Length: 220
Ligand SMILES: [Zn+2]
Figure 1 (tube, rainbow, N blue to C red):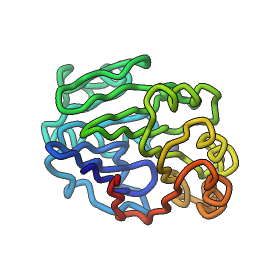
Figure 2 (tube, rainbow, N blue to C red; figure 1 turned 120 degrees about the vertical axis):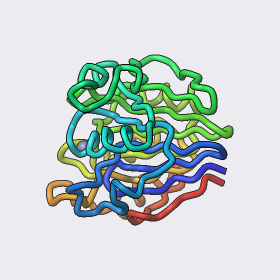
Figure 3 (cartoon, helix red, strand yellow; figure 1 turned 45 degrees about the vertical axis):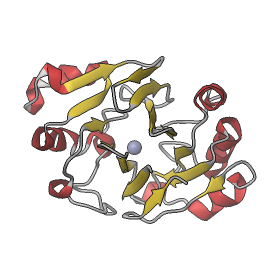
Figure 4 (tube, protein in one colour; figure 1 turned 90 degrees about the vertical axis):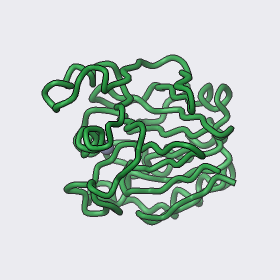
């Protein structure tokens, strides 16, 4: 059973049968954070989609305290020392393939944004999750869908810095995930889009699950 807990914004805890990971843990300074940094325990990997504050957030702190490895673009490792970490506290990858880390596989995907940006495909316990990171709509989402067949897509729908509801609904048409959960909305005024609007547009392509920060979705 794979469980996804929304921490608010683009942050998630994903629980597989024998390990737990956290993605983009922006908790300190996040008005919608569902947890505090100090309460994130027993994570093996800390995944970071890009270097902006609302994604890297508490990642270094959580990694240091949990002795977890940070997974993301290779360039993140260049800041290791500055953040009290060693080079082997990182799994610095680049975009291109799904990589077997033992219990789970993780791959970086393209994202159209800035800040050494990426998305993630994560596969474990026979379930596949696509976390799009911060991105605009791009046509190659079609191949992410065809190749990895995501059970769940986590898509930004807030607009202003990323896709809004309309663009994200086209993303679901390309990706065809079984389930889609909107994220990266409602944290700050510029990204106050309505997830119901996304749901209305995307429902013909995917099952849309709207969560509140702190809610958990178990992949059926
Ligand atoms: Zn962001």
